[in-house]
Length: 117
Length: 115
Image (cartoon, rainbow over all chains, first blue to last red):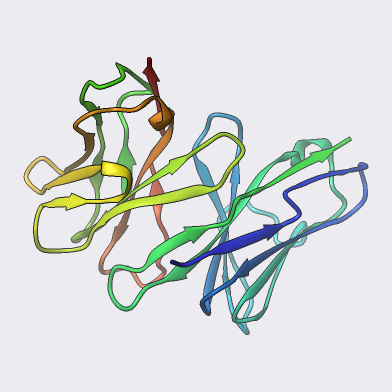
């Protein structure tokens, strides 16, 4: 099946620093990846759609200068949280679009727990 | 516009009993429907999807879901629940006519199966 990995699984950083999270599709090519944020016991909030070779499309209310997304290859998308603050602490999950036709599924990474101190 | 409602925050069942997790959806056109499960501090795992055809969809780990167009529902079911089924379940929808492949998720239902 389609496997998506994320690295790191857990990161603690100091306020004001930047953190990069990687999302990789391991056994398939993903032209489209998605980045979500999830607060405890809540649903997933879509942050942005990442398309290989082009700029990401951000959802309303998401600061594109704060959450930098780069989809440089068909198997890798990165999310960089710049100048992180404690309110950026959250669980970040990526997914990759995969399917033959029509009913494309999203396969999700295991998530990255970011804690900003 | 598309949206999903999961009316129950929590579902509690005894092991061996049937499990049902409810989901209703709203889309402008026809839907693609999905169920995912999330264990603590993990990403989402795909369970099953409805694309077209048979309204009863069978998925992983003995789960199934029934698509009901007239009631705009896609309830998840398992005939005999296991303690290991205890997790957070998400229903999601995508409009077939949409080209952005975005999913809309429900708020999630926490399932607790007691031994």
